[in-house]
View (cartoon, rainbow, N blue to C red):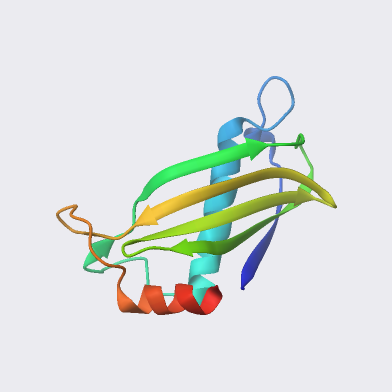
Length: 132
């Protein structure tokens, strides 16, 4: 199983009036780690730009277990958890030192340019299989 880890820091803009991260910040952290992971798995040009399919997120979840505050440093890990016919589930874990702060999942589905679900394109499926 391949896990990609991005080292990050809570920025002031990520926090709310309580001094904790705003709950939406976790989703941005997930996205940063996911995009780096995809670049690592399928190469620089495999997903962005011109392609005959889209890969929208259809389900997002996050569980907040411990606080993150400005200017905490943390690691966001991502891995392929499940591969379906047309979808992939990514699992995330955000840790500050040894403390698990946030866990989550994102499900992305391959669709054609008209929005109809299609099987995962072979290069993605192969990369995701190799990461399991």
